[in-house]
Image (cartoon, rainbow, N blue to C red):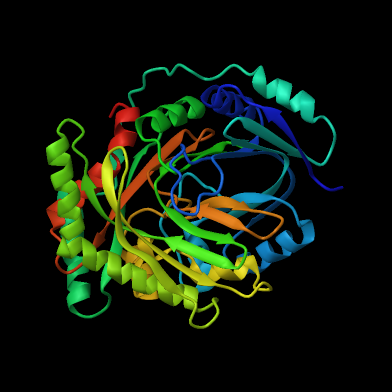
Length: 428
């Protein structure tokens, strides 16, 4: 049966968005993607929500992308889900021996029973069965989650400050020896007995740090509470696009003059510019594997974008693909995203495994959707809380790009800056 969409008028956009979240949380599987009305280039949807699974694909890293393509072809419907970082082990001859205590699947996609798309003054509901009006009434009558119980979550870290700095120095020796040019090095903050209301925490995180690739993702007893500013990969028609972030500086919300000076400092930083250009080259090479020859181009190089806590340096790279190119082939050719690995990709992924002390799991993976027309949009899972409600394990990770010219102490502070909104929400 074909999915049909019905439209319903919306009089209070923000209230309906809260009601959608509250209503969705009753289901064991839901995915809520929210751009917080940023309207960045190549805008897709303001809010899109998928709930309940009619069909599921969950698998480990080996043959994962081939299985995903079969799943897409068999269902020919809206498909939502995630790609875990450790899918790398099925793309290259790699392994992951560190512990992952959140335990998301390496790959999980589902065909939703119900899709809600909120845009402007309209709510569209897509279902294969009848009952659109009953769903609309249920959403419009849902009680928004408007209050948050104060939290105080104490976290441990896998690295002391001294150990982190020492590891950066070791990575710089690898760069000096020619093993790599740049490496994204991450550390985990965690609590082994955290009791939280994931929806309330997500709402607090969204209020503190509303970012254009935010996501509330509930997969049975596991949760992703995501405030990501970064797009991994978008496909619209025959055009594919990636927007890697490399380059970060703190905002100064109390002093407009100082804030502008920070923005200009990022724009002119030789270190940050070199980091960004290295990843642009990597992404161009990845896209060139699957795009029409000569079509890959840099649409914007090192644009500076404002977010609540930071300015970020973002580049946009695009290319054209043949209409018959499988979606999963595009994902496999470009995953994991270069902004979360470094260059050259395979060697730095080996070093990441050697020096990091946690399995990344869903962190630095991707979350998004594929439409029946084979369009898609995926974020980069950063600035995110991962939570397993059964084991009460809570985790968030942060990292920075290490080059030969990096200052190890400054890189450690950058990790803390990127985790600032999460730490504030958890009252750390």
